[in-house]
Length: 255
Image (cartoon, rainbow, N blue to C red; front, side):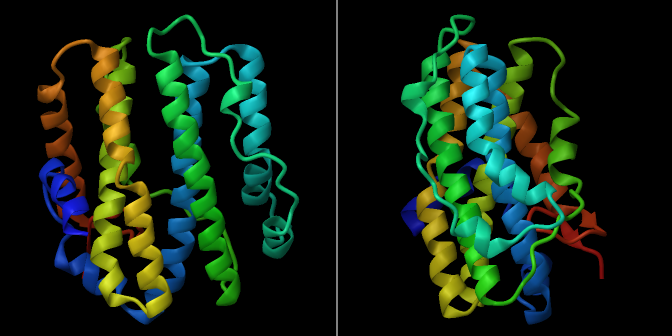
């Protein structure tokens, strides 16, 4: 655990405030937290999918990618959703890398495609795992309003390429790293099942932020440490400042 967390703590600009942990560990908060976490897993997959479609594959491959995501998005955006039916559906294929054709627009298209497809596959799986836990605990899935975290980070993205892509990849790295940090912070305060689950997520997703950073460096073709340092400050400010909303990536909860 500590070997996994050490580079994550070095990368992030701060640790999660104690006030967030105190709020998150309350039993009455668990339902909201699981629902929001479930949404976060899907958003992570959608973000990676956007990067592939925009930068890494041809038009026909984009249709294949959208078809892969369709059952998940249908479930989320269809109000007449059925968790059991969704989880028991026939999944014929969950890795479509061989079906995708890298675009020639970007020198690292194939590497981006491979890393992001692997990430999407894991995020979809984790989305289903959270749903299974919710179903077993009679927690009904619902959409939740997005907090300020991702939007706050995205407000700093530069508006010209390849800087836009570099910034979005750096932001992806911070979101993934923060998720892992919170898995570790939450785990000791949860029941045995959720403790094991969050530790397993940390082990599974600890690599994601490094994949994003590696891609950002390759796209930039130059030192991006200054830009990483800039987002490190912005991310820490969102985490440490007072936040009226409470969700998986929210800041310090207002009393």
